[in-house]
Figure 1 (cartoon, rainbow, N blue to C red):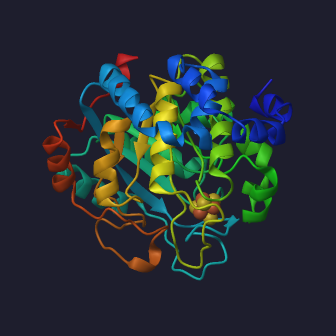
Figure 2: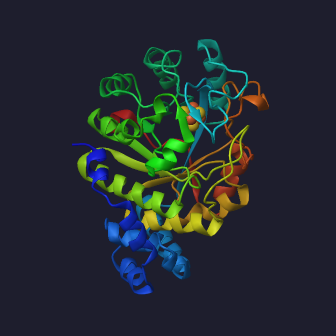
Length: 369
Ligand code: SF4
């Protein structure tokens, strides 16, 4: 049994209709007892919840402070490669884009690490395009120990791997894996993923199961909001999260809520999400899952990130570059997507302090679990 089996039995057309038919009574009921209830999540994501966003925000803020305190974990991505064997029409790394390709070698990774450490980070997210021959398990087996020596928390956002491969990387120091489904609408998924292994919707859908089976400490889910109906995609991600939390209960979970951003040769969002929509989704997930980590990337503007911070966010990236080798020598043409919040880590840490929160650079030691 894996999530794809559960997913096959979900009638998305029916769920969508039920969500869009939610009433204010449904939303008021959901606000009374939202934790762990998929019916409540549906109501809170529905258009009927829009007049209740202020109340949702108040409840979400109180819950987040109760569970996480006034703390915001900061992390930084380290892009290892922009090589990719997939065609995803929303991404600057897509195979057909005529951009300069690069895979960092040991020396280049060491240089990036040195710069990142000078900026005080102790939590790093390794990112690469999906290219299993040149940036596959053998490469990761070299890179993970090299990077782990310098950071307490090591996360990865790369192509889906097999259980045994995740287990090997865990043994070498991997703590977390972020793996985004992009959209839970199979037809839309097929339209946007036209070449490469990523076309296999079901393999990707079952990847978090493999992470849970490999005992990865933290599993991150995400959808690219804007590819399809964001309310339905968020609800499906809620179903996925609910299944995983109940099946692989030893792991922690996080969600990322990236909105589709412009990139080289990329597309415009089919279902654009407003700032208010983003607030609604963040609050709905916080009310649904108290212990869920929610991270917000530098795709969002500085002003919006500042305003969203108290509502349920637990982690933020800061000072990010989305290109391999981008901390040592930035080259715009290598970017995966445009960064909106371009502030330095010092400025972001100051903003966090000015809001009465604490920027946390280290909150993890592998031996603690
Ligand atoms: S989204 Fe990922 S898999 Fe798709 S082109 Fe970009 S890097 Fe490659």
